[in-house]
Image (cartoon, rainbow, N blue to C red; front, side, top):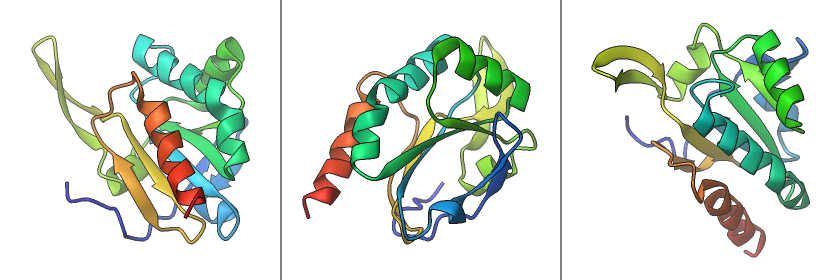
Length: 158
């Protein structure tokens, strides 16, 4: 997939864990959006990543950024995940993986000798004008949240 950096982020409107519609345009002109795509609620890597974002949420808020997670899980599953781990941000439902496809993160994966389609762990930093200013694909969880925060800090010091 070609990079999306420098391009307008694909617009989306998805339901969150409470069934409320969250759209990218809700944050236009006001906030940076840290949009992270992850494979599945309640799995070890995704739990670590969500909790890392949770623990850094105040830092992101201080830098005028909102965190949004996206997976193909249902609203009920997202709600359980949020409740279990005290996540202070919305998780968006992309069950038909339309938005994941638009961002190029719905890909063929291999695990235990099986091939299947799924979300490649990826994060997009979108500025208040709706431009993707940084993307991370094939994310390794360890140290990732710090990378995203450091990028935001650099932007706020410009």
